[in-house]
Amino acid sequence: MTRLVCALALVTGSAACGVAGADYAVANRSAQNKTSRSQASAVAPQEKDDGLVIETPELPVTYPHGRYQLVFRVRGNYVPVLHWKLVEGALPPGIRLEENGVLQGEAERAGEFHFVVAVRDGGQPQQAVQRGFVIRVLEAITLAWKVPAHVTGNRIDGTVEVSNTTADDMDLTFDVKAVAENGRATEIGYQHFPLKKGTIGMTLPFGETLPHGAYVVYVNVNGEVAKRNAIYKEQMQTPAALQVVVGP
Image 1 (cartoon, rainbow, N blue to C red):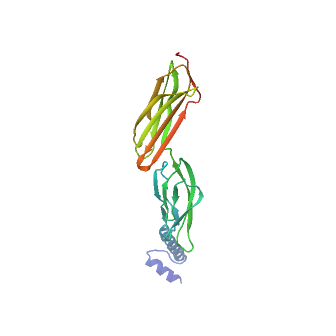
Image 2: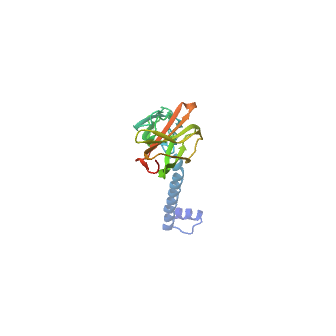
Image 3: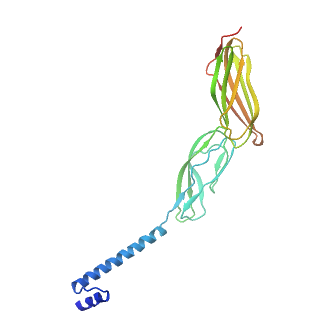
């Protein structure tokens, strides 16, 4: 036995014999085991099953009556065909989720809508996964004070900012009235023009000389998109009556 081990050692170029030869055999088996484990670990990532994962990113925003369409996407190892459904929360009224993963429609009103969708594959047993999403439906027209309505002598003046957040040009009517205590309304601002899509913060001034009295100022904007048969409206008013003290 000792001569056989020694012969093996000589073949490998080692000068050790006897017990040292036995040490070599153990070391050689250890090296082979490490090589096998290394090869197995190199193959493992390729054989790993990622399962079914919904990879659709954050959902795009929309606006009332705007056309909306999105296809949910997945990745991983799964068996077609996929089946989608809404399992929690609520979609914007007017938008629906098809079983094939298509989210489409036209939102009926503005708001922020939280919901959870689930998808399952055609495997046996089936894989299933779910994920939460948010759709933000923006107001088509936004209206805000830039310089709030105020009294200067015998005038009421102010400035507003108007934005068109939609993907459509709209026919805009801008109307401002000062309404006295007796109900008499005086036009103190009016414009009618095309408001281009994506317009943000357009400045619209108003103002007029008025008789002595107390006035509440009402600002109204109407935007019409004829091709969609859609009309968008926004209104605001002064929180209290403005007193014009100069004048008859």
